[in-house]
Amino acid sequence: MSKLDSRLRRAISVVDQNRVGLLCTCDDHAYPHARWMTAVSHDNLHTLQTLTARHTRKLEQLRHNDRVSWVFTSEAFGDIVQLIGRVSIDEEPIATQAAWDQLAQAVRQYVVGPTSDSTDLEMVVLNTKVERIELICPELGIRTPHQIAMI
Image (cartoon, rainbow, N blue to C red; front, side):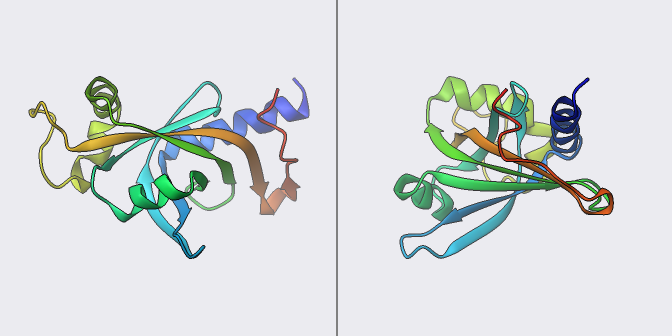
C-alpha cells in the first residue's frame, strides 16, 4: 500500500464517518459564506452529494459561482479534509428523491417543510465534482499534496 493510497483512504474515512462538513461558497461580491451540510461521498471522494432547499441564498450563490470548498474533520480534529471542486445543481425529482433516500436520516432534523412522504420535496441536489483533496493531520505533521484524488 502506497503512502498516497493510505492518505486517500484516511480522507475517505473522515468524510464517510462524519458526513457533516462545512460547505463554503462565495456571493456576488466575492464574500465567503459557510454553512454546515450533510453530504454523502461517491467514487472515492470524486463526488459529494447533498440536498438543499429550492429557494436559498446558497443556491443563488452557486448559480453565479459554482466553485466550492468543503471541510470535514474527525471527531477530535486530528484529521482535517478539505475538498475543492465545482457544483452542479440537479433539480430533477428522481435525483432529489434518490438523494433524500440516502440522506434522510441525517438531514431530517434540519428540514423544514415536506418530508419523504411528499412527492415534491422542494429540494434540489448539489453534486460537487471534487478537483482537489487535501488531508491535514496536525499531530502527525501530514499535509498531503493536492493531487491525491487524481489517481
